[in-house]
Length: 399
Image (cartoon, rainbow, N blue to C red; front, side, top):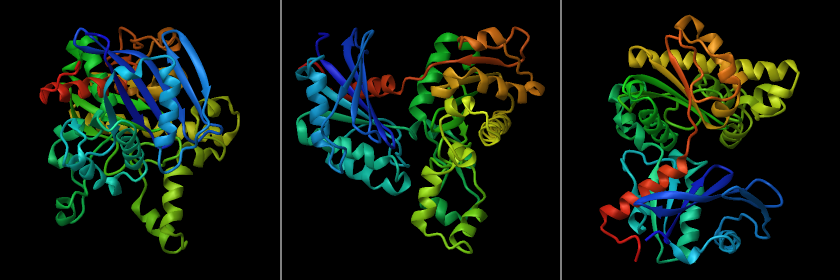
């Protein structure tokens, strides 16, 4: 009963992460993972199978139709895994709007509902849909599911989700949704297993990667988040600005005469750490760069994160724990240290030795706020949710 496989697809704005899972004791167990950076040339499949790692060159390009590329990816994966045993595929879909409050089977009607939300996530939604379409073309009978980044935040109060705009627009869906929900779901669950007493309290989780946001969690449920209507909102990111005065947008579109397309490109691809530094959106490169511009980009990143932690603590009515996750949160002690230094007045004290080795708990015993580092695993959540949809539909996974 453990020979059937389940694939997960985590589509970013310019990359695809693929998880390969087998069913073990009723739960999906990861046996491999792969990444294709769609912006790189030439395209390469980076595969990890147990301790072994492979870089497999790809011949196909990432066009509007991904079927040929995914077909080639499957051929490469087929040399390492029995893809004839794949029984289902789960996808990360960034936006579920007010339509989806949990994972769903991706039949034709559901796919059209997902497509209707594209204007709410123009950078990410099309990527997921292209992958769904490619798999339907290559394996029409394959059962596919969608897991939505927004549904974790459905527990937020209406007041938190509301923007101060005319009510009619709120009723039309222009509100705060929040994102990175699959990551927050995984980290909140991991914290519950690791420190259940803390997990039931007032916690801020900082998902810090090229895309970055923070989430206020109480009793394991989302209460507030830094990202709002779009993935542009909140704290600065690699190439996205985070919070921006809407008057600045009016100025770009009005007196500066920039087109909608120019402003959109600037906001998604040329702002954030890249925009401030003028050199890179990669925090690792900025930490190695001695320029004033690089330092200022890092300082702004840290300043906004510390400020957002305090805002989210206000929503929670206090703060018991801070959790760092994702690429920067898990692997950059200097960034965690700088954030903690700005929160010293709040009672955050880091153990330098534990922080430097990326330990699971990095606060001192005297710290009034517990600080943890918990690796995120969105693909694990996608796999578990895919399996839950199969079970609810009473579809035998193994036949």
